[in-house]
Length: 73
Image 1 (cartoon, helix red, strand yellow):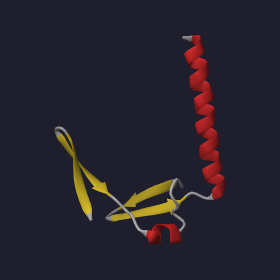
Image 2 (cartoon, rainbow, N blue to C red; image 1 turned 120 degrees about the vertical axis):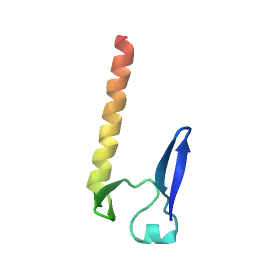
Image 3 (cartoon, helix red, strand yellow; image 1 turned 30 degrees about the vertical axis):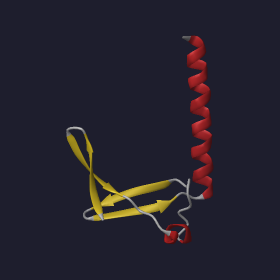
Image 4 (cartoon, rainbow, N blue to C red; image 1 turned 135 degrees about the horizontal axis):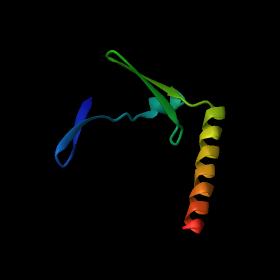
């Protein structure tokens, strides 16, 4: 079901998915996804283990850079 949420003055469409079928389709909690949108169609692609590891490495690298910036300020 497509819902709407309010950010005070603006309404934004939202889509919430839940159920055991997600885990059965390899969408475990915490797994990243790529969203592809085409005319009237939304495709969710679960990240591979390699992509998941790359996302985690990127997050850690960003944390290091943030720490360096905080020291320099």
